[in-house]
Image (tube, rainbow over the protein chains, first blue to last red):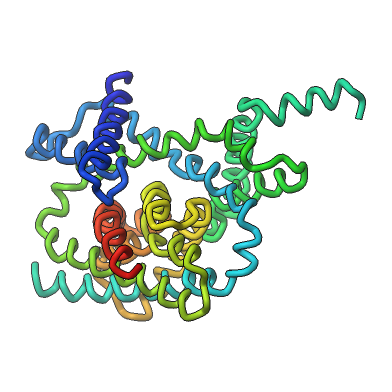
Length: 117
Length: 239
């Protein structure tokens, strides 16, 4: 278990260091995710599963992913003013923007999948 | 209030222990509420828990900074959780190899469209630059979206709420929209849900069809990486 937690933290740390050293626009944890994914692909080809501990720790973290957003989400209490002033653009961007995005991506993906595979 | 009680209150409001306990209690209450509402797609536990705690802070007058001092221990885990997304992505890799190229193209273009549609609409309706920067990474999974928003000069807390709301809207109404525009391929349906409403959309896709769920997971992961690369670069160009 400790090994798996260390691996996750180490990948994140490496990602943060790389992002700063190379002035990358990508957030450190995302680079960490790419590093871990690349490592798993290289190390466990042929669909071999990754170490069981890593699977267990990752599933535990991702199984409670929602909880991890709560502290940041509560930050809206200091933004009530911004929310009240921008409620219309926010609501339209979230509502219409998301549904347009779904329709567009779905149509595009269906057309591409038919033509290319 | 007697002196004793106010002393206790000062302790509770200042120490991380109470904020942490409150966060977990609100989360458990939100999960129970979600079950009571028969897992309705709009009854999202994150939004419910945020509403419970935010209401509590406003009612008691505890300020957000002292709440976050305790809650940051939960918040910290977002980083390792983002790294952990590599594990399910790797698990699904062998199932998706054959369709990977069209899938990746659809994810990148779809993600760009979803992001720009949101920013464009908000801009037309007079959103402030801060609001636009917070909205831009809207369709990306929350931990990544928050760090992108920070780089663009947005408000990470606003991004968290906007991202979660987009996920809830997409999960609740997305399947209907896909029916209207006659997307019948489960892979394409999954890609659309994951690209525009990240993890919450993926959870919904997974509950309907396994193929859709797997492709939705791929879309969530790849859109996060792709957007983290192109959005800050594009944003700089338009500044």
